[in-house]
Amino acid sequence: MSLIVAARFQTFDQAALAAQKLFAEGYTEDDIHTFYVSPAGEHARYPLGGDRLADPDAKGGHVGAVAGASLLGLVFALLGGLIAARLGAPVLIIVAAAGVGAYLGALAGALWVVGRGKRRSRAVPDDRTEHPAVRPAGVMLALHVEPQRESLARQVLREAGGSDIERAQGRWLEGRWQDFDPLTPPRHVEAPTTPN
Image 1 (tube, rainbow, N blue to C red):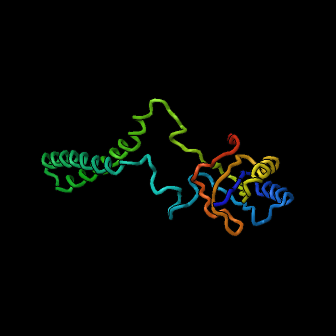
Image 2: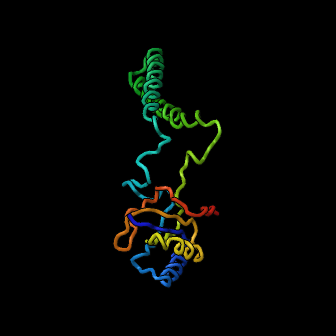
Image 3: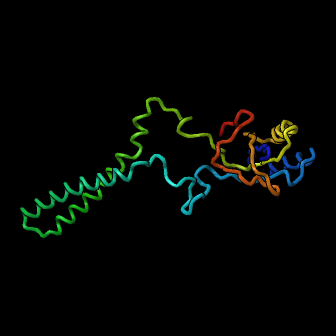
């Protein structure tokens, strides 16, 4: 594993100027990797997009949908049956009423269950536990450094306009941070910059 120091810049031009200053300090092109970090949720990790397979707040929604569809489907079928028996209408009314009831029940049941545990456990909102720290979108300049030169690298990045300076242990190969994961919370070595 290699020691990596990284900083966020507003533009690629700013990152290029920082790279020039790092070249002046003896770093080579194989030590610097500049890339763009997309906003959270837009990393296209799955074929339909997004960062996660499923929304954690949707947990249990399918159970609520099935329960609601069963319950309201049955109630609407019974009501449709009573109306059909009173009016002498065809069986199609029972089937249509059951379908409408199942649809409305699935919607209501899913909405009733989704996020229910989150609402119940929220006595005092605490955004830190619900949303872990993520890297803000922007241009990232990552630098492969030797441990004895880390403080110099951080100083150069800071003076060049870099923000949210972090350090990581990662796999550096052929001038790139190979195992960079935009979803892993950053380990800041200095106080993170507050977003505007």
